[in-house]
Image: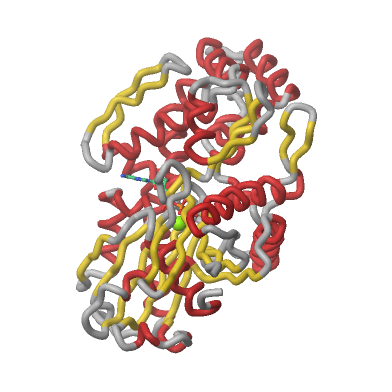
Length: 417
Ligand SMILES: Nc1ncnc2c1ncn2[C@@H]1O[C@H](COP(=O)(O)OP(=O)(O)OP(=O)(O)O)[C@@H](O)[C@H]1O
Ligand SMILES: [Mg+2]
């Protein structure tokens, strides 16, 4: 007997779930972990490709190679077509995503005793904002990658609907819930009528009162914090010798954006940065930028920023250690909150939109279910709570809800195979 599985292919983390007579469960994917970083590492030493925590471990052990993160963010964009060069070989992002999905499928197969052939893959409300053609292309690209990975029956479910299906398992009576899934790349919202009775029905279209999303997530908060607090020390906004000119800003934007970092390691860019260094009126800053690029330390730098962001969920003041650029900074929670304020404003209006879309009277939403890693940020929670002031906040499994809901959906659509 094989199972249909659900895959949450996340910008930052990925999980696999299955559903059997005992209900949905998450499968161990790597060393017992049910959620692994969506990361790959191409080693220049042994020419292997590794995934998840092993990829992370090799990159941080400074093994020579190419590290890739946030590959989901490339779906539907021009970068998808460009691919990425690893040493002398060009890899298409379709093949890279397929390799990652194949890894998840094999891990599931090890636990299940057979490789799953049927899958429900989660997708955000929008892969790409305000561009339906690019959004449709993104789903086709992901579907093609899943096929290359060996899945023959592939369905998609919206991530915020999947999270609602997981939440519904815990409700005792009918209610209208807002599900907020703030992940690494996207924020997704659904307004869903949930109840123990409705959970048994297979067609839930009438219970989905509205859903929407926006391309804002934890990786944007990393970028915004990096640009506000770290990149100035590497030369963002620094003066050139020619009066009135500044170092080009795009290096710093790319260095603060997980899926763009590798593009800065191209020989052409390194040569350009050497030119900027010669023209710089503040060369000690541009030297830091140059060192990070030459030593391929971009991910390490951004990981330090992300770690500071995560620590700020529990403290008001943290040290941002970055051996890479030899700058040690203190960052306050208020500085992070100022850096992400515009994004939070946009999240707030999306939550208002989805309630309007659902045609609900004020106060009709009685519960807000939080999932996704970025909902651990106090300012994100406050932003959501302020848009639905009368509802109770329920904190779900930040990293497992979507995969659990996808597994439930896979069980309903495909049953046990
Ligand atoms: N305690 C925390 N405080 C703040 N942010 C956190 C915390 N824990 C994790 N994060 C952030 O949550 C994000 C990852 O969340 P999650 O795993 O839900 O995303 P994802 O499912 O991979 O992405 P998406 O659903 O957008 O494709 C990262 O940006 C990470 O930095
Ligand atoms: Mg997610």
